[in-house]
Amino acid sequence: MTFDDTPIKWPKARDVGRLGDMSPEAHLRVGLDSDNDVYVSVWDETQGGSIEFCCPGMGGGRSSRTRMALIALMVAMEADNAESPDRDWWALRMTPQRAQAKKED
Image 1 (spheres, rainbow, N blue to C red):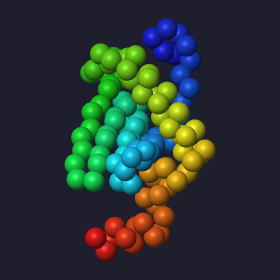
Image 2 (image 1 turned 30 degrees about the vertical axis):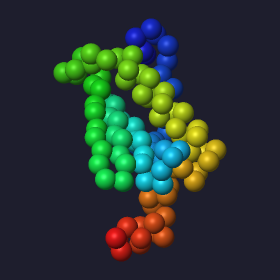
Image 3 (image 1 turned 90 degrees about the vertical axis):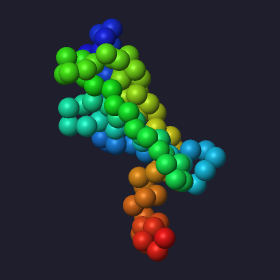
Image 4 (image 1 turned 180 degrees about the vertical axis):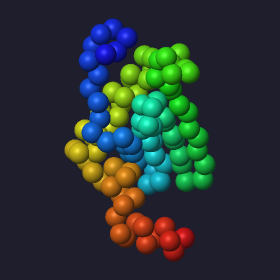
């Protein structure tokens, strides 16, 4: 349950990535680690950063609404990726052509 007793809609994947609308490389990833803490990473062509929001009662959990919103964001990103897979960061990353291009860089 959530902070207001509304059931969580969980994403299918543990890590969801989406390319931004204005760059072929910049992307957002949101995922769940083994403790169900939520992490967010944002990267462009050269640099990026990550942040984590912990489960309540597990040595953190001071941002429970933010954590729940990020889980909802994962679900929304999965829906966007299904609708327009050309922006799905993981699907593109795993294509043989892209993997080969990365090796050649």
